[in-house]
Figure 1 (cartoon, one colour):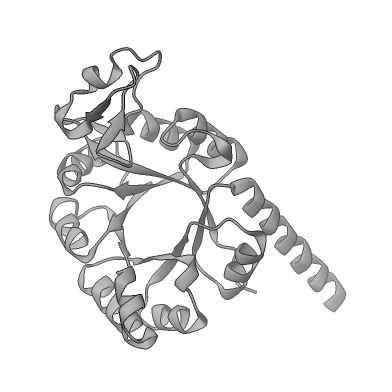
Figure 2: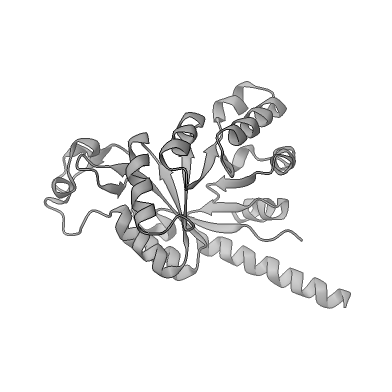
Length: 250
């Protein structure tokens, strides 16, 4: 039987707001293996949790995150704006792993410095990396592992087998340890090719139990979900089935 995939809790898990400490705490309490969140950089060089550059401010207006300081982002807010350092401190204490989804290449160099300063190179990896960003990450953050986000357009415009060859070649050339793939494009053919190329395969973002079961049975390395409790239940179900199979055989 395949080893059960690592459980990655997507930011905003269990119905909590995206990029919130409540979401992080829910993931840690449930026992997820990995926590994923999006990383951007403020004007004063602080790494923060945010998906979009344009963000809603506490007064109802919108701001450009890259043009604002952390202090400006927090004006009028009842809570601090979550920084990456805040989150990494909790990840380190819990002994977990964090998937840093890079939303801007400008975050690479300061991120590399922060992770090294905190001694967490074994507790983080990068995702959100196109081929170009993955190559840059190899220069600016060479000590941090990285996943290649596959080019989805290639799977739409090319023959499936050709898209697989391209994705694996780009992953190897960019020094990535694996591919980050939307679960909808995963087939056994892709898994076989990834294994032949010595790469891991991480899939996102899975909602339905049947998809979780299927992907786990196929042997993907990690499943990302906003509902880690559901995926944990699938893992328990899998473990129970395996234990009973072994008991029956013996």
